Length: 492
Image (cartoon, rainbow, N blue to C red):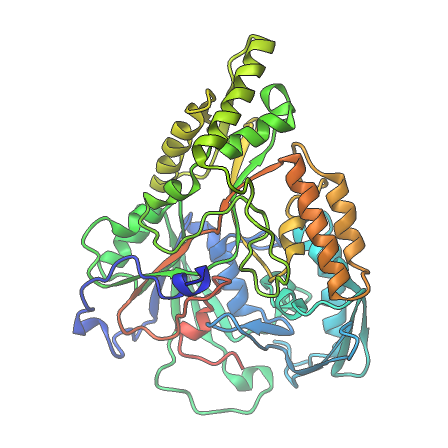
């Protein structure tokens, strides 16, 4: 069974059924939903958003296309589109909808919004992803063309990101509208007639969403007590909260997510100045045991940056250190550490930062034990600034090796990097066809691995708690759970 299939059918635990009083139309004042985070985090604005703020942005501001509850591309403000035969041009027909002031949405509005956002995203990883965009043209009042430097089958997925919502003078058009009540975001389905669409009868299943962000323990308690019908987008750092206490109202739902879960080297001095020593750390880690302590059956460890199971990955690369057992790798790594210690007279020590949470405590303990087997002392840093290593847990935006490689561009990393890999990724932007682009990206991954700037562990973990019988939630590879679906509303 593949990791996709295994994770799709995975449930961490099955709990007692939901009490009857919590089913049906009991949520007359709105469906209560929580995310883990600080209370203010769901109200963030700008282009760097928490997971809770991304949920709000996704609900209240639409892009040209969107992702539904199953993680599939669906129309957004663009009601239809075509892709030219060369795969370089995406042409969209926009819906006949209106801005809040009654003015119609035009292709020029969409063009101006996208150009502005692309400019603001320069210097970020998402800005690097958007380098494929060569030109944007308003062809008619309702038709817009986005021209790329080369074919990109996954471009629609990139275009569906919350940051690329179409806006004008701070206004947006979305399937929901938000009102703030203290620390609660109340999101109500947008009446079609309010944005220039034909009026339609309101479904009996439609309801507002009452979204709050709470610290991990409080969020878990809110779900366990029935105060929340769903807890969305937990990570491995908070996963132990999901199996503590009498959770008798639902089931843990695990997304088969793609992305990065591993450790970035942020210091290239001392022990970490040598590539061989950085590789030694990666060789020492027992990846399978690292996550087994969370009872995550089906999770696949990996020492590669681009996952072999990534959709469209026609040339998956083999795992590293083929034929070498963990004991063999550790013996080699221990020899490197011993040689460095004798040469410098120093003890090998590294400081790791990772987010807070009970899962983080388990990870640190396991990693400390792993590195101790090769003579390296691991200490936990309290802040990422000044740490030697930083753990990242990041969801992929779209299914391409280029997304994974862009995360380690030299312009973004504080420590060692791989300029050769960056050049190869840049060359792939104008490659003649998918085969040439794919070959360049494989070569780029090899160049990045050769510099040992990142210690991959496997796929990121995303979990949610959803009460029995609640519709509108579906596990998917991008961990996107639109609030309008939970509200029983349609995107358009």
